[in-house]
Length: 338
Image (cartoon, one colour):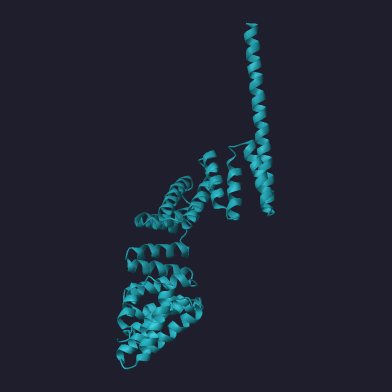
């Protein structure tokens, strides 16, 4: 009996010792984590990473330390290392919102940089999975819902993209970005009137959005509403005077209105802003060729058109319609007669 009592005492003593060691290890891990955070705040990132590495060595389940390492790797542009750190953080604490959200962001960044479509799609699906977990933990997080919507949109799952974009809008009705994204989702489904409404809702919240104005103008163009499109593109130019794309679209509007002088001036303005703009040279060629067809004796107009088109094709070779036009209107070259 005495021997058994001694064994129980020794076991209890061992358990207390183990608990004491675990407490010391956890205390050390937290101390390293705190020092790492202080160093990171001071911008001493490499030193911070070393302290955080000591923290997770002392306590591999210290989720916040893994997450902090991921944050530093993101700041350094080391996204694959950030991914690994966030994944470890999520494994250590499956109920922590922040590492799941951050991991989703990193998956999205890596998807954009993926060298193959398949790789990009795989990363987007991983992003969807962690964002879904993130909004399960915190359903009312605006950014997580909006990013989840963007992932679904990139995967061509428009109904789900709309669902989570609308959820984001419900959480933050004053977000112009959310309404803009909703407009793009509708636009991609040819739901043009709904897209226009969403774009206008976004503009009511923030008028200084040249890219959104470009989208709005393009949607009007697809409806054949040239004057409305022109107004949108002119507003885009007012917000971003150096936008070659906006001037190109203004040129296209004027062309369809048969105002060839103003169309040519707009295309030339676009070319002056961006000499590598295939669209600007394409438009210049279209105007000159249209004038040539109205005045077939003026071969100089034809030659100007062909020159502009050749330049456009050098900048962007995959323009099959322009290739066909160049072949059609190029003067026939014959060899010397024997």
